[in-house]
Length: 439
Image (cartoon, rainbow, N blue to C red; front, side):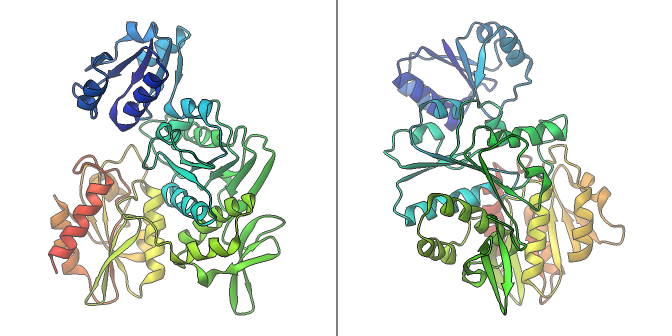
């Protein structure tokens, strides 16, 4: 029997895939009524469900365990099964065993979804039939039903650590900053999980401005990107005369001004995506057109309102310190004034100290909410004013009082959202609605 541990959207996709192959399947979940349970029972009433806890004896008797990325390999029941010789993999391993088209994999602490979506759009513009999913949107196994020329997958560290058979045509590691300290005992474990993406990759694409992304495993080819002038075959930016050019080595691609945004993070993401364009030899003109119109994804440093010369930014997807810093720095390049930054949520065991310097440079006031607000308050510069609030509505009202012409109000939580919201989408959408309601 194959046991799917953890239901939800991904677990349901695994059950459907395995049942299509006529496997004997059971489902196990620590929750008494996990998402997708009603659908599972309707589609597959014969599938046995073990709910409310992990059953060690059943797991140890399994032929194979397909583990949700939301559950750690270190759980005692999972460890016990592995010690009994039971194979424990994730849905991406099943996908990798079955996929018959080239695969592009994108990982990193921040920017994964943006670059994955960007590459998907670049492929479509080049006339490629592409399946896009993984940690973003569609579960990977659902893509196998599509007649496709290329797969583009966003993968988290949790997905990578239960995958052995993946052979990416291109693997991109965008950046590594501290995250998921509640899951990884040591930073080295998190780095190793991200670095696993380069195993078996034909081309490894890394960020030369981030030493942690440099491949630690032998790869057939490697290529770097960053915002400085590139060497050899790498990607970067170089000013020639009055024009900043996107470059591959000494070859000009097109002016940076042709990009939809001049924010450093957007330019960096575009360079990473162009590595895929150049690898597959897609038309550069179609790539230029896509990157000229691509507006990014919701909840990622998204300008949602400008009123009375004050800009309001929704960066709810900034669920870790690195992402929050990137958002604060991007906004600083957009405005003449200072920032009122809304921070807080579930800290995930994070060290918030790296926030102190950018906040000192760019913030005139910090508004703190959620479980981690006291932890964040401890690292703030002593002379930086702060307000503690009990709700997002209260945070927005206080920010409106503080902001003056030229300033920006930025929701950049540096935390997960689950203490007060369903997820970062819910937090971001509530922020948008509340900001517009106070006009």
